[in-house]
Amino acid sequence: MQWLDNTPWWLLAGAALILGLAPFAPEPHLWQKLKMLSAGTLTRPIDIFDLALHSFMLPLLVFKLARMTRLKKKKHSSH
Image (tube, rainbow, N blue to C red):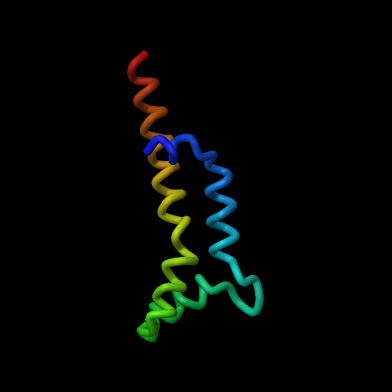
């Protein structure tokens, strides 16, 4: 997980934002696929792949921020 610790959080946030909102018009794929998922129409493999692709950076960003928080708390408790 060293590579994730060394990756700046703003870089992951920017990538998550760009991938999550692409394409910007007529509506972001992530939003479109989440609507399909909630409606129960997300069944085609290409749509499932699209959801995975456009949301890939979000869990990575959350994991990075959680690790940063945990490491910061661990550092403060050792003093």
